[in-house]
Amino acid sequence: MRLREPMPELTGASEWLNGEVTRNQLIGEKPTLIHFWSISCHLCKEAMPQINEFRDLYQGKLNVIAVHMPRSENDLNLEEIKKVAADHSITQPIFIDNSHKLTDAFENQYVPAYYVFDKDGKLRHFQAGGSGMKMLEKRVNRVLDEMEKTEE
Image (cartoon, rainbow, N blue to C red; front, side, top):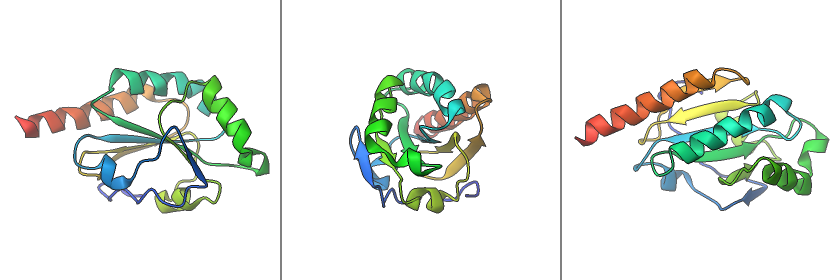
């Protein structure tokens, strides 16, 4: 995906965990962070506490959605996904993407990967890899600041 492109529809999930959301529910009110992860990804598990911190810190100001992107046959086990999600306190909605439908719509190749959309659903920041949480936080704050300025 390129910057300023609209958020793809959140369709094609094998299953949703922790509730289902649509693109229309996410757009209009507040920015959205969509993060791709996988149960076989060590970096994803390491980054999860920071994502959860983000989710809690920006509660009410930022939508946070997880997308489980399988990297191998072993990653397709729904019970294992549920267990890892519980072990890592992933309480936000999780789009299980066993068919890679959303992965393809995002043209995503990485886990972990982070997509920040403004309240209008336009992509404002993309980042991949386990490091760079400070940069991600800066980008989220920039989008939130812009939103507050337009509301004044």
